Length: 236
Image 1 (cartoon, rainbow, N blue to C red):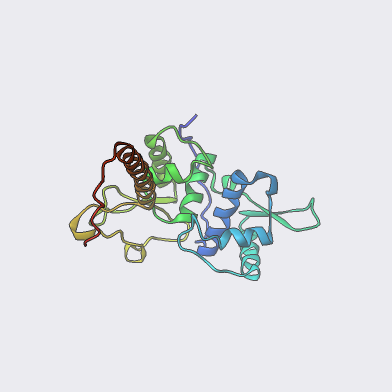
Image 2: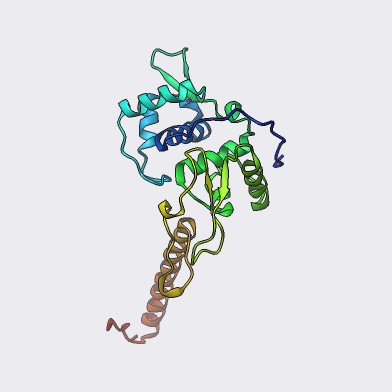
């Protein structure tokens, strides 16, 4: 059921490094998306950290860097190493350490992996980790995380051109707006999120395909009727 739970105050946790947050995000993500290979090997975990899609910012880290990061997360009990395999494998313990439900872990992991996002973007981008019923359900869990002591997320002020406020996690410390990517509007028009832009590209491709089919159909009909069609102008 998509309802926030009451969480007791948790002990203070030191600030995480960006790579520590990325490692945790990858472990949570792969737990849901590739359960057959979870817990993850060092190689798989490093590949997930360096993944080019669904990552912001894109990283390029070595296995040694990831291993050092894992050691730091082990000391915080955020990561455990499995003992049932000859190849070391790692799993996260975010739920217990932070004392938050799986829905909140899904949202935090999505913020770890993709940076600041609106509630609508979080719902779409976390769909494989948890299926939220609606945006208000996402906002309920975000509000709960923001009300934690200490708060785990913060709602950012809207920047010029943004239609909705974005959220960002606080596990790496306070968020500086000057360090966040700005979505600039072109010519004073509306700005679009990445998901909205990809949807627009997909729609444009679909429409272009339909236009091509219609053009071919008209040309066949004109040929059958002996009608000569004017070629479309290519002038700029």
